[in-house]
Image 1 (cartoon, rainbow, N blue to C red):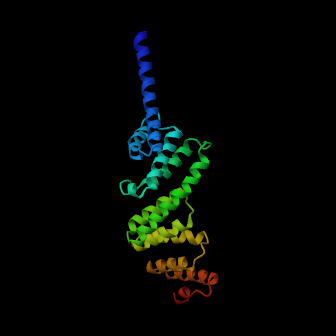
Image 2 (spheres, one colour):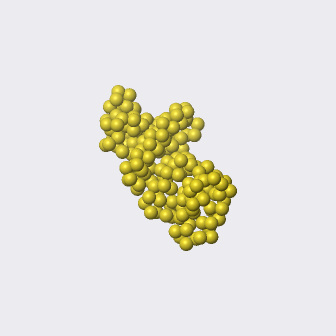
Image 3 (spheres, rainbow, N blue to C red):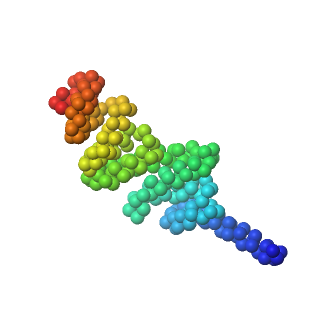
Length: 221
């Protein structure tokens, strides 16, 4: 290859790589100076480009950007999945580097994001938007698979949607986890009975009555 052509190619590659890294830094600077909406297209471009898509900092900054949006009521209407995108971004950053310098920071931020998204799921439930509520709690279970409260709410939302299979699955898992609530056993037994499994329903109620002998709901059922 001609020396000048080869040098030009190397310079072009170097410039291209620099440009992509600049997008990441520009996105972070936009965040710092509260230009969060300007940061979104920059960071979205960075996570799709081969030069920056596998860098922990790219995903960490993306998490910070969407966390900022998640905590801004005026912006969450425009970006309704901001909390979810922030959590996914932090998870991706940790996937790239489990020993990241940002581990503790992301863990702390993740707690707040989880609580925020949980509240969103409850609000959907209270507004009887059960499909949206279920989607939120099922997402949270991908983040913390054994979170009993998310599992409970997922089961209740599924039940309201008449998705008996999902409701039974979540209530069954809670029983296996020994979740302390007579209501779960009652709900599970009702589902079993609706499926024609009278024997199974009686076994569930028998087990529940041993655990909660004075619960009126179980006595009536």
